[in-house]
Length: 208
Image (cartoon, rainbow, N blue to C red):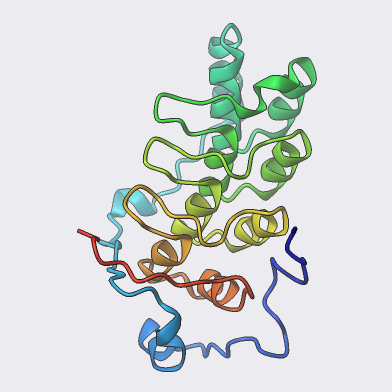
């Protein structure tokens, strides 16, 4: 029987967590610690200066890259989804819609790439064209895992509204909640996940 979908993707405003401007995860643990899966460890190791720099390229550079990949539409689609090239994604899918779930060597789909990049418009287009929200990588990551790892809350919300499994586990038994809890900047995504009616924190006993 299909689950009743009532506000799956958005926190309930009446019961929404109250995060202060001085939010830290200790506050969350005090009030909702029982919902964090046992065994969750921080995956955040700090950002380097290089990570913080925005790799902004001129439009001509993107056009050149697209031209180089024109003979490999699947590769181009994966790249375009990651780089937020919505027009290119739309064009490629209009030419061959069946490649919407194409994969790279690690089994990432265009939806995975758009999800971890936080590109909501591309995510919308891919799902409208039949992208599989349950697709998994070689490590068992779903697009929702990708969105939650990088605190892309709006993308995570949209995926949940389209039947993404909030309790999906990777091969290492990580749920989207584990990944969000391991990110120091994840308060919005944590709130989204913790207020979802279907969240089922699972004890993690084999996490290394």
